[in-house]
Structure formats: structure tokens, C-alpha cells
Image (cartoon, rainbow, N blue to C red; front, side, top):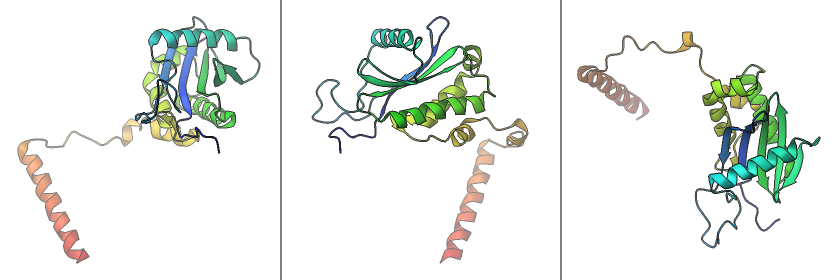
Amino acid sequence: MPPNMSLFSVNAILIISTDDSSRILTKYYCPPHIPHNAQGNNYPGANPYPTLKDQKAFEKGLLDKTAKQTSDVILYDNRVVVFKMESDVMLYVVGGADENEIMLYNVILALRDALNILLKNSVDKRTLIENYDLAALCIDELVDDGIILETDPVIIASRVSRPPMQDAPNMQGLDLSEEGLLKIYQFGKQKLGERLRQGL
């Protein structure tokens, strides 16, 4: 078992435009609680690029390096990077140098497939910017604080997608006045009392 084994396996998820090297959506992760014996950025899951300048330099170099690559996994700046090209954007998942490439590859495939489901097979810069909320929620459902939560694209898309408007509840007849809220409270109190009496 490696000494630095950790749940914090993803350092960053990046979506970058290949046309002008601009960021579309980038998320850099670091653990919410730093280990007590940590010194600097030398602990599992630490964000190696804390400043915007460092992040942009890393992204530019990464895009330049992967533009010529034919594989999907590279080692760049002492980080394992898996990537996929979709239309005019590059999707990247960045992990530590000792991270499992297959696990990171599953994350990038889940991201790509979930975005294809959510955006109806139209993953390009314009569509991503127009549906930025869906893309951000998709990444949040996939990874949280660097911990991989889910890699099934269908489940991710179902958690993120908007409900159809005809299924949305009708909020027209809802009385939110003080009297209406008091009636709701009394009704809830009555139902709770009935349930408790039935349980005893």
C-alpha cells in the first residue's frame, strides 16, 4: 500500500478551448482539511497551482503539449493528465504523479459521456458557454473536493438535467401569507401526532 494513499485523487478538471486557448470551465481541488503534519503543498490532494497565474501557465503548457499527442494519458509537470478532444474543446482530468491512470480515465470518460447526454451530442465551446450551469453541475456531481463521487454518465446526467416544465409543480395556488403558513404548520403538526399515536 503506497504511503500517500488518499481519497483526494483529482487535482483539477479543465475544459479549455482549442481555438484561442481560453478557459471555458476550470476547477482546481484541494482537501478541505489540511493534514496537521503537512508542510507547504507536500500532502496528498494538495492544489499545486494556487494562483491564477500558475494555473494559466499550466493550462497553456498543457494545451501546447497535448495538441500534438495521439495518446489520451500523459505525464506533464509531474502530474498524470488524461484528456479527450471534443469538437473545439479539450477536456482534462489532472491527478498526482502516483495516481491510478485507469481511474482518472474513467473520470474523463464519464465527464465526456455525461456532457454528451446533457448537451445532446453537441459538446463545443458555444454550447458549453450557453449551458455553463449544466456543465458545472455535471463536474460537481462527478468530483467533489478532489474525491471521485460517481463515474456512471447516465446517473450524473439524471442528477443534473432540468425537469420538464410540465412536471414542475404549480406554484400559483400556494398561499405564503402568515395565515397560510400557520395552516401548513397546523396540518403538519396534526399529521405528525397521528403518526406518533399509530406508532405507539
